[in-house]
Image (cartoon, rainbow over all chains, first blue to last red; front, side):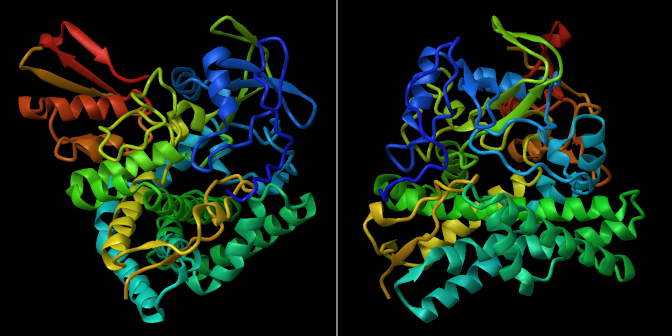
Length: 413
Length: 79
């Protein structure tokens, strides 16, 4: 694999309950979590964690514990002032907080979630299938017209979820070059604080202009409909929501598509099972890729709202807890053969979308995009294969959301 | 396991993740008002019990309680 360049110094020594270690980030295999996380899960599943800001908190690696904390509202999602496991990020400015619902608790969070959830319901996402199929077919046509080789990231995996979220929100797709660039900076672990803040500011300015335009002339996409329906969201709140949905709506699925394709191409037996298994296996394969790859690579963060006895560990009010979703999704205490990719695996309680009140708003959209795009990709490009050795595929060690920076492929014309 | 099953949904806890409607779309839908769970039936037929149990297990907010054995053994699923 291309030499991993973790952003933080990588400690592989397991932390005991008394000594705090840094967040394990060094992977041996690009598709497996850092092995040190597995050691912790075996030996010290609730361990002290040393943050880059000098504070000490907790790292949880067992499936059962991660789910329990995510469902326990004594832990706050308001992590704007929480410690970050891998690098400090500039705190959000107060004027950027409205609409940032993933950092809110009940009842503030509920207000946003109830307004937005109808637009992402399972039934409505199923109804989007023909639109997604058309977008996917268009991009496959363009790939075939250009001929092999091609990089699937700019030609397929990034544009498809971008187009879908643009149509859903009512964001002009021709603006994608700009918001892709802002998104890449906002999620980068190597950008400077100034670069991150500039990208956030530009994104907020852009979204505010869009909200004001919809206010003058509402369309029938999500932002315009929210405005036309007379919801009590302010322009600042709508701007914040729009920013969040635009970034979360394309980055996550784009990376799952690209990393999922890379994974299937390097597991030919699983690719065969996926291609020949019919619709039920296609659905299971999507869940299994979500579990196996868990691209929210540093997990979720919560802050204790009070002193809590966590399975014998004294968590103090204000301490940050990092819940390793990748470690939880490879927990042998919950999953049979957890380190094995098995696209026929029956549905399981993986935590790739999180758990509790913040479980991903767009999860049903992500599922249907993945199922349609992955199925059509392998059907539409016969003999699809990597155009470079696997270890030359550039991995996103330097981003909060894991994946590949590019995916050079070839196929039979 | 009894033949009977009754589904009780705590809509105050529901935030519309949609897992139930994914795994048992003939039993669960979501409101167009606020996305929360809508029961198409409270007493699903026996051949759908397994899918309903799966749907309840997958709920991220423990919204669904399944009363089996004639209500003597209500189970809140999946904390």
